[in-house]
Image 1 (spheres, rainbow, N blue to C red):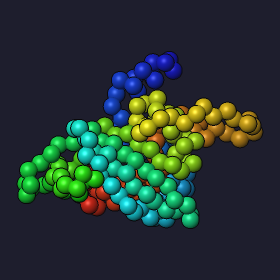
Image 2 (spheres, rainbow, N blue to C red; image 1 turned 30 degrees about the vertical axis):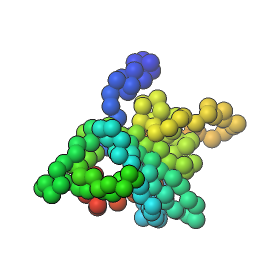
Image 3 (spheres, rainbow, N blue to C red; image 1 turned 90 degrees about the vertical axis):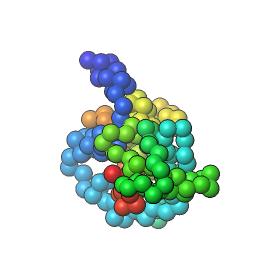
Length: 176
């Protein structure tokens, strides 16, 4: 059963909307994460054009700590300059790129954040679902059994820093 669910997750392409929905299902009673994005300040957004996709790197600050986020979207469609319903960004290659806004519901997404919430709750599961940018964290050995597991539903997901970055990119028209 568990192997079948894992194989199904690997066969499917994970979207941002699926990762976002997972945190609502896996953590229905939380007062943080998706409810605490207002305290996150995102800055230094970099757009890295990649073959048939877009990598977005950013730095954010919350609770006097700095964190790094990275997201990769595949299936990004380029658009002619000046075409209606398009978005543009300045890539790290120094060129302006025009794209059709990336649909969060239909584009494959891989994410990563350097915060501990993401690291301990989602990174390993995102890796298993092929939704992690970069390498998985080392296997964590619990030191106590007196507390519940960090992610009892064992769902891949996202942290408040990634949610806030996506909200900003929606406002800029890059994502929809």
